[in-house]
Length: 177
Image 1 (cartoon, one colour):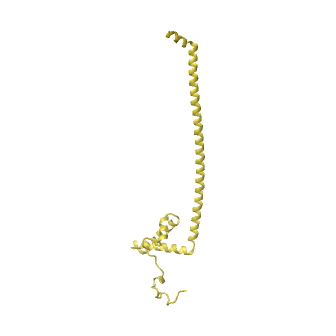
Image 2 (tube, one colour; image 1 turned 30 degrees about the horizontal axis):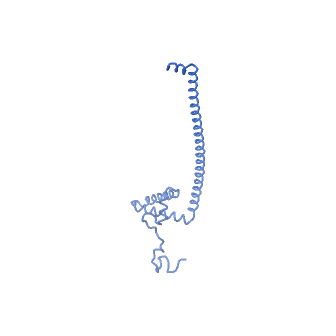
């Protein structure tokens, strides 16, 4: 009876139909997997496109910001140059150079004349480097604290050294005009 049942099930037509049915099932599964992969690939492509657009926009914004900052830097450099040309600023700059040179001379005093010239040139190069923006914190501390350096005293005019009520050495007791 079992043999007769297997002969009925495994007839050539049933075997063909069973194989065809399995082939169709595998075809449907592979087509579903293919469509799923295509859909995911399309999603990845849109993600990549969006990311490239965002990166391009960010690069463009960064370029605009860079050019704006470069223009602002140039304007500030020109403003510093214009302000340093004023006579009172030139005098303050020269005074700063001399104060720094004097400080340097207090440290290195053996040969006065060559050392003095060397100190002045070093002070000038320091001032120029600060004006070009290389030593911003030092310049800011000096402006905020108002000293000529670490504990150095800036020379005062002769009139400022006189005690109140006393005439200065260069005047006869009257007010200077």
